[in-house]
Image (cartoon, rainbow, N blue to C red):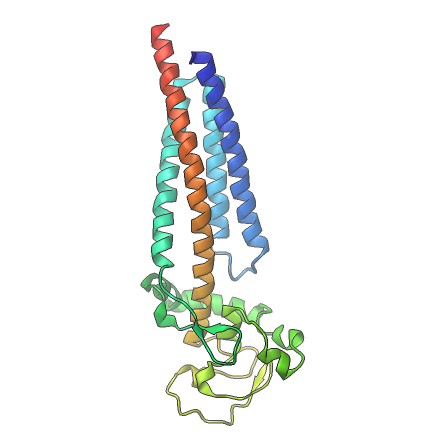
Length: 264
């Protein structure tokens, strides 16, 4: 492989990296458009990663275009740092999302979630008073709970509904409380449950209260975060493999180019 061929390969590798960076940014935008403002915890980091990869690819392309060994070394070092960062985040994401799963309830098409089932990292984040107050305020303003009565006109429709984890945890009391549902947004609280679950006392029919202070609501949010983190982790595995191939090919091309330059 001649020096010209090596430089040509590096240029095309960086075009591929630019394209990959654009795909990462598009993935981040897609995450943002599919979720409301309360649940965009990973949207900006994903878009930031795409932007960083794009900058790295530009550095590599300029290095190959001008045959500048310093820029090419900077490109390879930055790409290596990116790979290490993606690997560390992905491993941590799989560890954090390893725990937690819903509990099936007889007669319901959706699951209920318990906060203690989730990793200590999620518990620390959700039990932080300041962060939960911000998230709670956002959830109250969102349409998650308010839309239930619009989507399910009758009690039968509501009982056959397949609620999301946040709807199941924040918009209604836990099933073990035993409160009879009157409709999708109102429960008969005149029944006094024997169950010791603290969430039973916290639930109110008010739109501003609901079960937003309940552990079941935090568990619903934790399940959503788990799903989001797991999706990004799987995406990162694919991204890591592609970038690793690009990095190895780039290293080989850079080594052969340097060897040809020394011979020349």
